[in-house]
Image (cartoon, rainbow, N blue to C red; front, top):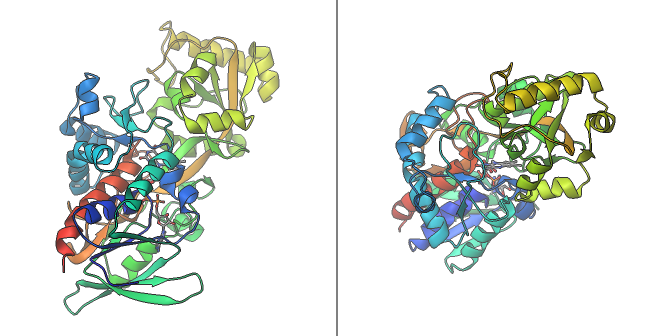
Length: 455
Ligand SMILES: Cc1cc2nc3c(=O)[nH]c(=O)nc-3n(C[C@H](O)[C@H](O)[C@H](O)COP(=O)(O)OP(=O)(O)OC[C@H]3O[C@@H](n4cnc5c(N)ncnc54)[C@H](O)[C@@H]3O)c2cc1C
């Protein structure tokens, strides 16, 4: 492998965005990916491919009123003002340009999702690929990368170190092959796009003890490599307690049951047949709520109308195909199919239907419904899961990594490796914060590194 202008570590959404942006600007790029399985196993490939952006041409076509300032307000509201202010401004500002670039320069077939709104977004602003599958998004980015002669994807090769010169500026990246052999590549810029640390149980126990007992449903390579590097190089980190959880991972199938089920009017009941909160506050914070119920399990209850609406999601089709959906013509059958007590289930259904049809206030304050549920009913058994971490290396508005508050020349971080925009804990996560931080910071890093990395 020869020396190059920019080395990017990790070929998920963040790394591909960084590598594409730098290579399109005329730089030679080595994109080093640790795992052969990254086409299925990176978080980007596992995701639902929702990318939030405000003020886009898709929104204009759909006559959706929105702006970066409004998006920023939504982030501030969801995080109670705890989101990293620099990154939040940078990402909400660049998001519209980002989705244009993904569509026009990278060939990602984006469309605006207008059939429902995710919790906390005050406008339709999630952009996605037609089958709402991260694998399709990831494949489109890989195809774009394959068309660039100066972008060299190297697999498997794990970034294990970054060398700096006497001024503290990046001078080389050290890659390691599975057989243990190492190679040092001279470069002026390194982008850390190695995701977070959710696959490392020790780090999760240390930083996110509340979700340590949940199932982990994300990429196995998210082992905190950027964090370990941060410790060695004395880099700044922040919001390490932030994460994206999810309150509806179908079990035992271990497939995401989209929260669109809830946003279209479904609800969750515990083993006693009772709801236990306002589900529409957000799927991330619902992970620990589900885990706190008896057995750490719940049932997502919905109906045929919602089932039809969710068929647009590739992962919902997988849930159906796996046989996870129990169907019932009436509540007695639903109770039999789920093992829930019929009296409690009936009372819960009556209460929820009353709230959903405006006949009474919901006891948990839920106001987002889409009409009462009608037979035939459907139910899927779910648990709470950890999807990815949202804290990481502190960066500036160009995605440059900070040390003592000052950018390290030539060192960038994006996606799960960097601090996100979700504040602290699970509750600050807005749908799409993960991919926006990955693709957006990757795009910013690649563009800036292209200037910095020119030799
Ligand atoms: C089921 C699920 C659904 C989701 N849905 C959404 C969604 O709809 N919208 C959203 O915004 N977010 C979603 N997320 C979160 C989102 O997937 C992540 O936030 C985002 O993909 C992170 O991108 P990344 O590039 O940082 O990490 P990844 O996509 O995980 O890429 C990191 C890559 O780095 C590689 N790597 C690791 N260490 C090294 C190393 N030392 N050297 C070289 N390579 C290395 C890994 O193998 C991996 O390929 C979802 C997550 C899950 C699990």
